[in-house]
Image 1 (tube, chains in turn red, brown):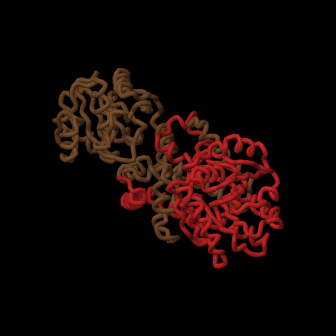
Image 2: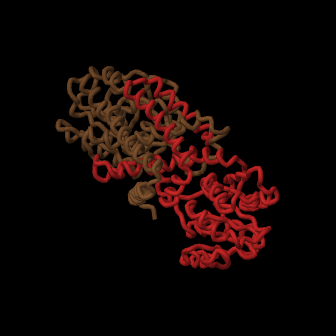
Image 3: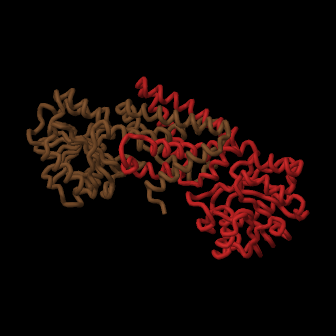
Length: 287
Length: 287
C-alpha cells in the first residue's frame, strides 16, 4: 500500500499508473507535478490525480513513492531540483524507455545511483499520448522491467515490484545495459523503421495520394509511426549506443537480402522469410 | 453477371473472390483448378467452389471469366497450358501483386498482351493464407487496381470492374509500371522490412526469449512477417526492379537518420518523426 504517490509528468504512462493504482485501492492519495499547469488541471479534472503543484519540492513532500514519467531528456534537471529536499525514506522510481541514461543522470546528480532509486520501465504504450489517453488497464498482463544494481535497496525493490503488480503487470528484472539492448531491438528499432518508412513514402514522388493504396498490413505496420515524436527523439538520443548497434545490424542484414533479390537467389530469400514467419508465429503464438 | 467463373489457385485470394461473388448472387457456377487436388477438395468441402479439375484445359471450358490467382512465378507456365484452348470470348484476369511481370509473361506466351486479359490486383490480404482463410468480406471497401493498357478491350475492362464491384471493392486504375512502384512502396518494402526485422531479432544473441519483451506495437509492426514466405519470395523476384529502387531509397534515408542520431542532431530527428506522424495520422485519419 502507498500512502502518498507523487507523479512527475502526468501523461499516458504516469496517468495510467495513477488510474490503475486507484482502481486497485492501492494508493491513498496522488499528487501530480509538471511544468505545464494545463496538463495538471486536465489530469485533476479527469480524476486521475487528487491534487497538483508545479513546484517539485512541494510535490515530493511526504511522498513515499516518487514516480518520474517525464521525458528522458528532462530527468537530470528534475533530479537536480529535488535532490536537496528528498524525504529520506522516499523511494524514487521511473518509467523511462532507456535505463543507462537515467542511471547516469542519477550518478551525475547524487554522486552515485541512490539505493532507493529503482530504475524501471513498463513495456506498454498506445499510439496516443497525453493524460486523456491514460487508461486504468494499460499495464494489465504487460511486462514491467526493473533494472536493479548491486547497491539497490532490496526493500525498495520489493515495494516498487508490488506497486506494479497491483496494476496487473508482470515484473521482470534485467541488467541496465541488457535492458537497453533488448529494448533497442524490440521497440526502438521498430519505431525508427516505421517513422522512416512513412517519412520516405510521404516524401516520394511516385504517385499522388500514395497512402490511398496502402492495405491493412500497412496500417498495422505503421501504427507506431503515430507515436509521440518528442518522446522518440529523446529515446534516440538517450539510448544512442544500443540503437545505433541495432540499426547497424539491421542495415547489414537488409543489405544481404537486397543482394539476394538483386541476384535472384530464390532459396536465400525464402529462407529469410520462412525464418521470420516461424519466429514470429512462435513468439506470438499465432494459430 | 457471370455464368461460369474459373479460378486457378483457390487460396485466400481466389477463394475469397468466389465466396464474395456467390454471396452477391453474381455468379452461376464456379470451377476451381490447381495442381494440388487436396486444396481443391478442401475448397469444395467448404462450399467455395462447385466443382474442380486439375486439368487447365477442362477448367476453362465454357468459362466467361478466368481468374488467375496462382503464384506470380507460375503464371507463365499456366498461360502456356491454356493458350491453345482459350475460349475466344473468355476474359482473362488475375490478382497478382505485381503487374509488369504478368504483362511480360502474357507477351511471351501470346506474342502480345491479349486485349481481353485485364491485369488486376486486389489490395487485400490477411496474414493467413490458404482457402480455409478465405472470407466473403475480404474485398469489402478495399481497393482493386486494374492496369489497362492502350490495347485493352473496353468491354472486358468494364466486366472485370463490375465483378470486383460486386464483391464490395472500389476499383481504381493505374498504369502497369506505376502500380508496381506504388505497391513496392506501400506493400512490398514494408513486408521486406518486417520479415528482415524479425529474422534479425530471432538470430540476435542479446538475450534469451527476446520476443517476450516485445510490446503491442511490435506485434502490430510485425504482423505482416507472418505472411506466406513463398508468395513474398515470388513478389521479390517478380517486382525486383521497383522493389530494389524502394529499398535503395529507404536505405539512403535510414542512413541519414542514423547520422543524425550519431551526431545528436535533435532537430533533424524530431523533424523526421513529426513528418512521419503527421503523414500517417492524415493518411489513416487518426482522431
